[in-house]
Length: 209
Image (cartoon, rainbow, N blue to C red):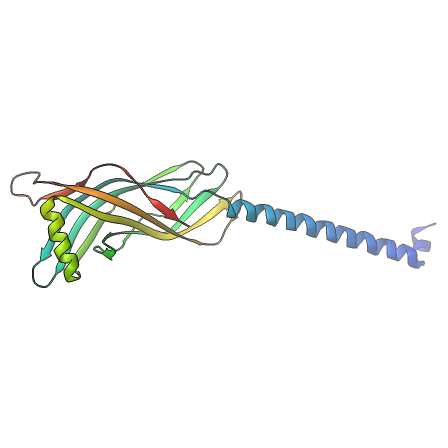
């Protein structure tokens, strides 16, 4: 039977329609499977691992009576991407210091960019706090810690990240790293310098994504 004769019969038209429907359904299933695979990979990546490598407080001045704290410090943070097949884009990442739950520095922007599989990224920003008002009980606690020569602050990094799987890039996820810094006093490096505090050991950070 010729194509012309077949075109005049309803069963030939139905056969073409079935083939088109089958091709459409098959294409849809393949697309769904690809999306499911991509979502599975995105939802299962390991969080980046953050470490606090170094912390030095060069200035920690508390104005008596008005409880205004001025802080100058430098920290060194590292991040490692533990995933074998998933890359990470860091977006809008900032670091700051906190003491007993209160910020004592402003946020400092960290360089953003792409972190490949099993790659390291290291940041060494300065953190500043100029005349930050602190609660009276925090001022008392801070003075006690300074006199004891031991200080615990938390270095925090907050921002957004995106996962990259092949050519596919996810939406933004909130990132928060919280790093305890156990500091001990170093009484004046150089004559006449103000006592400073330095990190005693590398600290592992808790990370939420």
